[in-house]
Image: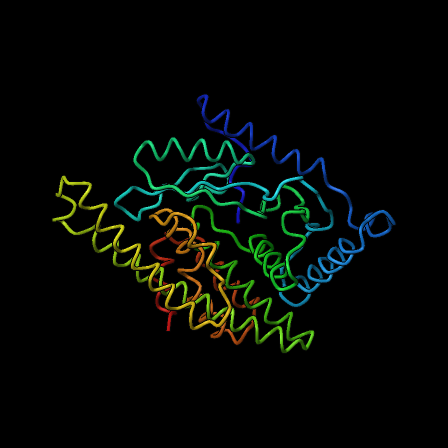
Length: 347
């Protein structure tokens, strides 16, 4: 996850208010940082926290030495924000379209979400967008990358994660430090997802933790099945929305009814799928939220390009330096050219 709210060159009251909360939120994180080295020396630091902080240092070292991800001062401090998420992202899409709304930010270009350090402010923006006719989704974010503008600390919002989840998160965020293409949300997030997946596999192999590796591989397979369901539903919705007859139909209620029918069909397919997982309700919480275009787009953003990145890494025989070098050459291309290049890699 990226933080696209570092500086402001925008104008108008709304822009000033938005960037003010962003600056205040980032300053709060910086103010609450405590050096991990000092916390490990402090007898008042809870043993469970010390254990997790040592794990973070081990993961950080592994990321640098084995994954060639430059930690560059990141995750050497810890900050307790006193809340469950670092920030909340607002996603939006038209009621009858999967074209995500995007916002422009200095440095990082266009992103398909709007981040707030206050949940009430995020939900206030979501309400405005909903009243304007958009499908909206508000999602809590445990961690984000400032792309080297600041030294990102470990946060209380994710320190209690299980080892595999913590490793995956750190590898994901550090990938943004290695390669980032301004204005291409899907590329950046799917790249970080693919590298984190590969990094976690290598981490578990390095520990010879075969049970954890098998469990993770099964989790990846379930995730792929979930993504396949979402992809199929998005394709059905996209075909429906782009149908000229539907676009000319003035009866919004009729269109909503068909849209809801497709979303309910997705729920039924998930219910059938989860029964084959034997006690692994990985995505039950995801389906408890309202399903709409914005919600479906969040999955597409992070996973649409992952198969292409996996294929590229295989073609480089697992050489991450060669992998990143090939991708860096794409940074000067237009987004459409990058998509075509990556599409040619997919199995």
